[in-house]
Length: 225
Image (cartoon, rainbow, N blue to C red):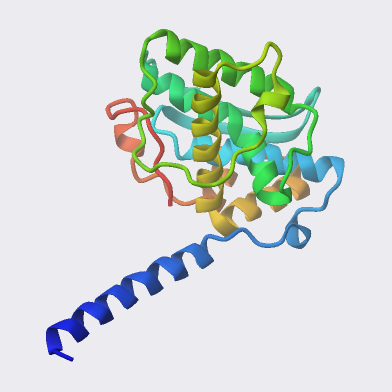
């Protein structure tokens, strides 16, 4: 076997090992470790999903507050840049679906009843995107995970184009949650403990937003850890 062939084989194995370790590092731990399957636990999982998506979104200036004790359950308060484009609508669809995606990432199914409003708002964003004639999301990586059964969640029934766009946004949201790994779970635990987290407390848990100085000057998308 030639030295060049050996070198190629070693390189391929090294790349595969790095990719494998990267996936292991980003695998969300078992849900019973830090996320009890209680009403508060489900809300915390859901809102933490919205929070990490907003944290990595380039149209979001800051995440002011994440809470699980609002009058109608939990909520995430954040401020966005004034950018009007289909890319922004794609990002907002992902932000809307990130709570649902987090629940599925943790438990394998949607666990909160409050997801209905998120689903309706995400559909509105998708309809706006399709109305502009732009069905290309601003991220390159194609989602490969199986999607949740959106057809059973909507009435009137989704068009094929709506289903594809919602699936794209949902799967991207799920990738964002997974990419935060244990920092996502730390956020859930902190919400369970304190019930409300301000901007500084969220910043202490999640990775630094390296793109913060150019928020509003770059194409709307998501930057993940």
